[in-house]
Length: 342
Image (cartoon, rainbow, N blue to C red; front, side, top):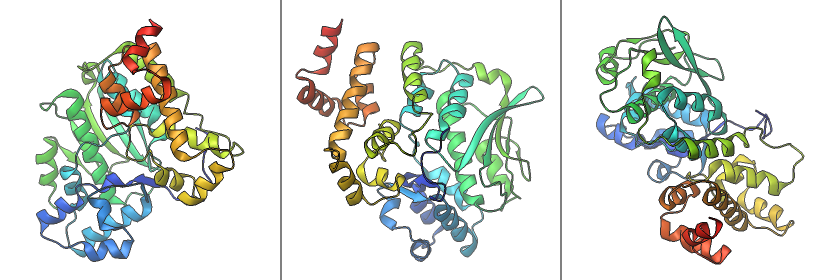
């Protein structure tokens, strides 16, 4: 994938990654306020996530809480308390895939659009399959708590795709054991091994064929085409409008599709970004509206996607908000416009 930002820019992570932190702290009866201040993380982001945080800062915060309060499984507990994690269009692709194997292949292909911290892949292990996670930094003992959190997220995603009765064959962690290992085995309902080469969820190879109830081959092809067009990134000398439009398309339907978040990705302040866009006679809002309209037209013209799903994909609160915006720009409601194309 083409590098889209300066290499000196810090790795960023969606601030919703820390949802569940307050609940975990409450369960442990600890006050994490001072550690949040020391790590420069506003407490409000644990309640209402907004924008991105430095991944290094987040990993340091989780490790610091675990050490200072002697709770070596803190990241694991945060993951248990987290709501489902949305990845915008990638979440749509996963739900539209015909089976688990196809969904995991999509994650392997498109995750670079959404996560810079680690790489994921599939590996065969003696008749079983492992979904592996490797730190880009390649270090086993730093950021242990964040890695625990991420593995719980992945496990929850399997449960959504395969049903609540699904269980893995084993769980691997690259780090040393933390606390009472029986806690992990009870939660994952599987053997848990430590000091492995990588973090992984291991499961029977036949599970790759597990069908996904929400599969839709026609719509899947369209969404995959959309995501594939984004994999190349943009060239460093592209103008600011092209860069902003790229990031908007990547993040449609997520919490980070806004001026503040995309400013962070471009390493400028929101005010500076607005000034840069103004030189091209654009505002962030006008670009967001334009991209949403383009994508809406593509899906209404080329697929049978429901207005509910399309509104969610585009990041509108509901169908009514989407319909009003579409009508303001095109002159007719989206369902009426679709009929004219038929």
